[in-house]
Amino acid sequence: SAVISQKPSRDICQRGTSLTIQCQVDSQVTMMFWYRQQPGQSLTLIATANQGSEATYESGFVIDKFPISRPNLTFSTLTVSNMSPEDSSIYLCSVGGHTNEKLFFGSGTQLSVL
Amino acid sequence: AQKITQTQPGMFVQEKEAVTLDCTYDTSDQSYGLFWYKQPSSGEMIFLIYQGSYDEQNATEGRYSLNFQKARKSANLVISASQLGDSAMYFCAMREGHLSTGTASKLTFGTGTRLQVTL
Image (cartoon, rainbow over all chains, first blue to last red):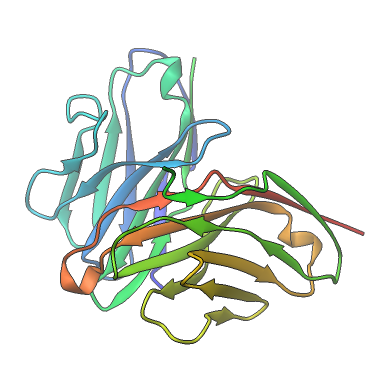
């Protein structure tokens, strides 16, 4: 399985600020995804990070609020912009490849917004 | 209708016993994949086991096995010889389509089951 490093592991932020979360994989992967898990809830897909093109966002998520970059096949970032307490969640990146149907997750970023 | 249903919000099992966590799914696709993940209190999502819709054998990974009953659309996780470290949230998830054919869609998760292993 791929080794996925996600940083930061946790952060406490002030409302109105932005936080960028990084996801680094130790091998090239085809698919990278970003999920959000609100307190006590299940996971919801934010977007699919596409290498070399704009991310594909799910209903209810927009690029201005959650800009995503994916400059290559091993790295992606998610920014949570203009944060409010409602953005307090665990954010997780997930990766998968063409030859392997399994999907693995990074260790997650626990974000608290005051 | 819910795509993934986990009807057990919480389960208790005694150490060294086996436990079954239920998961039913709903899809009209012929090609799909079913996943189980473990989430300890640290928040990370740990991959446990995967079952493809065309796989004829039930998937097994160490103490984890997936009881796949396609006609009933169920994919229950069986944990044998429970350990205290198994205490966590467990999520069932489904992906419709396949990555290799470029038809894959997002993972849809169930609401989870909190498993508590007791002495």
